[in-house]
Image (cartoon, rainbow, N blue to C red):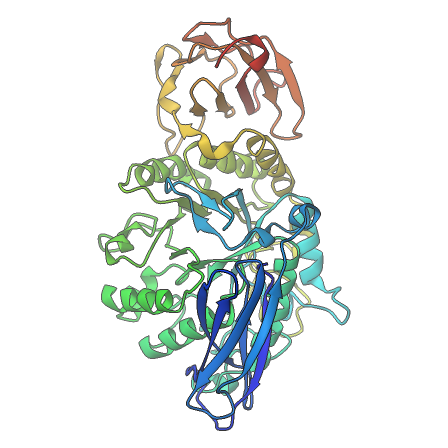
Length: 545
């Protein structure tokens, strides 16, 4: 089940790349479930239909087309239930992601909650992030590192570039060349997308989910007009439907609205185009700018201004690339968490880790803990040197000029913050994290209401809880001498432990007395001036929850 399968076909006639002249109808023998999937052009007269069986058992298929070479092709595909060991190795065998019933997080198709801890490599599909001759290139080095560090999602772009002064006008190349031949949007280069296929398969096989957009429509220039944008979105939706992907319609979508004179309706039409070619119902949103100078309703560092159009089903946030804008994370999440009906809010881009910032690792873990305890459905980490996959020896010179924060990708892999985020996943996935709700108002700081973080002070702590079952408190730096009271404790017996967010080490401490509703949190471990995580869980051995 859910493993992508390819059916190769040969057309009798030629067609333009953005047409889908063949559709395969798959029918499940046991239930009668039907799934209709178009086929995509893959060069010359070759067409491919990709199918990820959503149920075990036999699936029969038959193609239909006005092209005699593509019509009435029949076959059978058998899908089996994955073993427990296979599921542990590759969560993608649980199925494509869905929105949870309560609208707060993502699940696999089988209902298993998905913990979205992402790493950002917008330049994944470039020659410098190469496959290598024996699947041993930089791309595989990167995947192995992120897998060891506990990441579950790769934030990526199908096509990188388009119009930056350091880049070719048709984007950046991979092993197959550029996305379009001679920068002509009428001439798609299938070899480019075959190299992307190899990356998508490797990501899927290693259990990662992908999240990303076709490109940045309009940020650097207006290479894509409205028609070409709809064509490439349609093509990518069909070609990669069988993989486990969270869709963003564009990177920093506001630039197309301003610089390319797209109207909001142009963008909504693009969203409806994607949804019409989304048979697996992949989640769909758009990546926003972190700036707030856009015209309303798109000045909110999130995609929620697009919600009324109906094609979007979750929100992406970008909260700003500076330490002084970290406070936007809990603020934006609080705003989005209050929306009705609820939608998952994904912190897709915050403050990227950089070697020039002495607090870089602290800022990385602050963002992750704060995001999840503020109700985020996922967090996307980023690092300078990784997102653009900076290689000073790039033979094509398409990396771009490095800034003061940019270091070579191999060095950037070793930045401390990326290694410390595994402990966020380690702690929260052991606590039924999907049932926690943000309750920072249940913390009293020095006898007063717990304030929201601000531009100059990100020390206020955060809390998420499932009353009577679990309480998680993140205490940032700057609280060593402050009196911190946890209120609204449901009457129960608890166990308590401190977690070091730098190492994952845990230390048991005396819990609150049974039956109290408020608890003065004990002194922080050493070093007391650092950030710490406190976890309270109901002790099932000591009475009812």
